[in-house]
Length: 238
Image (cartoon, rainbow, N blue to C red; front, top):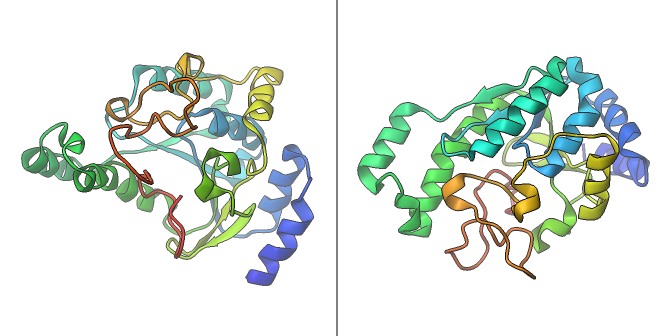
């Protein structure tokens, strides 16, 4: 697998997005999935994956604490790309009930451990169901989103999930991503132009202040590296 990934990474280097996606899809057998949170990167990928919907299962994780604006762009995306058949995965009600009883409805503000447990219940557990049996997982990760993502490759073996992760937008800048949105009239979350460059759950996301980094608006009350646990490799936490 290592040799195959190295070969494919060299092949798609510099390849246009419209060519790289079908090229990679043809080189992997089995179940291929694309996860969307309806952020700007995922919206761009949605546009380019839509022509190959029969080969890719598109899904989203509904944590139950989303912004109204996220549901609005979800609907607009369904309207524009009806062939995608976006499947929604939800957290288990009994897990939510247990969390609320033990930590409180907004217990994630109390400690990092409590916040991570909320993310695990609402995101990580549903994700495991969504990617079960998949051989390829397409994501919207970009290198400039954080220092932790600069060392990524287009195609990487995800040991934690035992599949290959494909990051088509890895070396795209934010400006280039925005240009694709404008060029193809792709639906965009209305919060984006209000300073929400990275949009997660409503209680855990705020607009960026001038000069702040891409993910500073996520879990802003915490210090240090802040992630929800969706993108974890053996030695990396994205």
